[in-house]
Image (tube, rainbow, N blue to C red; front, side, top):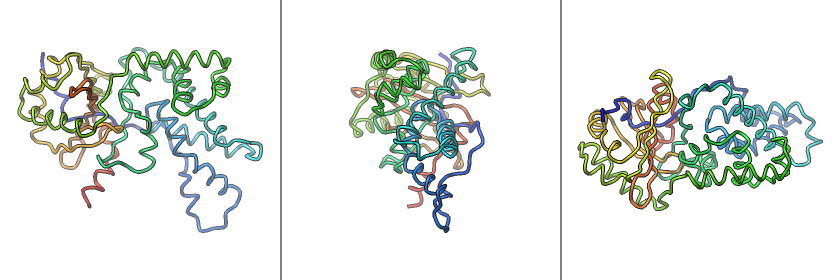
Length: 334
């Protein structure tokens, strides 16, 4: 099988902002002025921001769109009489759910074929963890593998599964968002749950064992050792590569240990001249490669029973350029 040249920078996901941002609410909280009603409302909203963004991220798989959904919720709240809201957390969750549902439906109508899909945005952090907002985004084992599976659900199924199974929102509340009965909402979540359980690959819970496999992968890659790579891969391993619009768009999928290990020459060529660092990608081990301080690729692993069962790669230069590597620069300066 011919090598895939865009494979190797060691890749996997950034994002392109699609909408102009509303003024950051945090600025309202730092004004050295007496707190008025608007500032107080902004402060209450800010208390829920991290949770709302976590909901939207699971719904959309896009960090920029998740932020857009949260800001839309703020705009709606700012135009609403908050005294009439008995449960602000529940009200905001409902609003974000509806906004995300509309965005998913609009996204579905724009796509002409599955190849127009792209990998979800990653949350990148140091191996010793990230800031509280990053941790909220990836809590409950929300790895890239799960986000990829969620992309296969219908918008209503995804909403029901995310809100109920991940955030404990009652079906009565979900029913109002999807405009169906509570029993119908329950069935939506059930179908989604079955799809997730039947598709989501298992993962290795021990970080130490994950690290051993990733280190062995790097050694074999740099050495162009086909047999060593083959030994690390599950026979049914799946590699997904997001090449971006410039390369024709869509996700390229390579299946099987032989085909994936067959990229050994490409791995060796592209890692030799680049700095490759270990990172956490949505809580799982990954690798980011940089050249002259600029990200050239990001690779995320799913590991089970000492074997690599899935790899996710971003080969989109535009999205790579927008990766947030602040956490890595922080550790370099320590």
